[in-house]
Amino acid sequence: QPQLVESGGGLAQPGGSLRLSCASSGFIGFTLSQYNVGWFRQAPGKKREGVAIISASGLTTEYEDSVKGRFTISRDNDKNTVSLQMDRLVPDDTAVYYCAADTWWGKFADMGRTSRQDYNFWGQGIQVTVSS
Image (cartoon, rainbow, N blue to C red):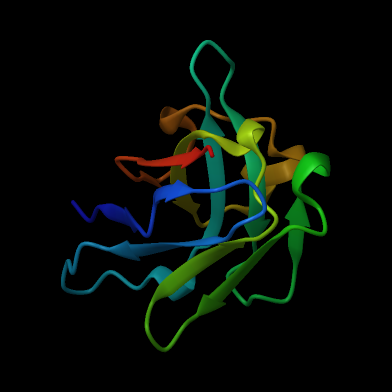
C-alpha cells in the first residue's frame, strides 16, 4: 500500500515562511502525478479543515479563505511531489498538516471532506508551529 509522506514542517516566526512537501513513500508503480492532492490541517481543539487543493494536471487550485494570498500549492509531476508554500505565517496557522490524494476531484469539492477515510491516500501529518 503506497503511503504519503509530508516533510518541511517545523517552527516559524510570525511573518515567516515554511514549505511543506508531500511525496509517496516510494512504492513501485505509484505515481502521485495521477492524483488530485489536497492539504488539510488540524489545530489542537479545532476541527480539521481543508487548506488548499490541486488537480492532477496542476491546472486547477483552490484555497481556504484564510490562506488565500499567503499560501501557494504547486506540484512537480516529474518528481512526484506536491508542495505548499506558506508565507506570512500567523499563529493561527499552527496545526498538524496532512496531505491527501485521490483520483476523484469531486471529493475535494469545497474541501468539505476532511476524514482520512474519504481519500485513497492520506499522510501521517507534520507539525507546523508559528510562534515568536
